[in-house]
Image (cartoon, rainbow, N blue to C red; front, side):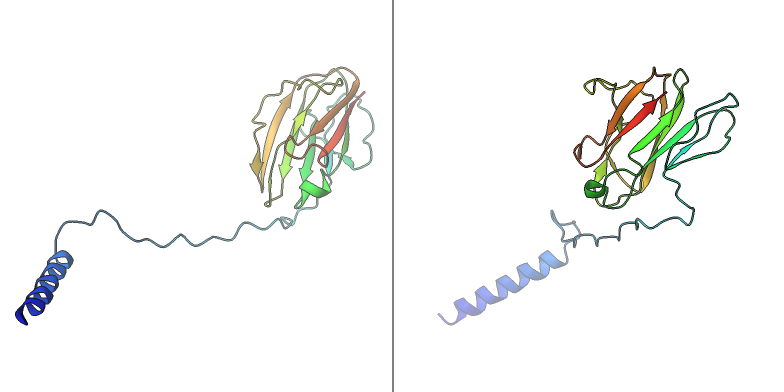
Length: 176
């Protein structure tokens, strides 16, 4: 009777040693969860931010409105709208911009917010249909930029917004 526990203990020990020294890989492995890498900061890159920037073509264009700066860039107009860190509650910077009617332009969405995904969608003046732009308008978490080629628009007020945060992240592009 005393031999039974000793025999059982010996059998378990042999089985454990055989399992540990087996050359086949186990059907499972334990791997700790990957450590979280710190997200990129939303800090400025060292370059001044002028909010929306307008680069007029060589033809006469309307004067830059508040928050915009004018600079030549090879004859193309570029507007930049930024989502700063915390944009879900603070909104776009700037919330207004202006371009000339009848001329295609480039719209750059600068998403500096590493806290939430955003996008920028431009709507026709009726506010219900999107302006067909060339570029990726999908949501993304910053920092990063998306550039949209916008066709020539007729005069009017064109709302733009983030589809995730439409009440706080909204603005108006005025086409004159």
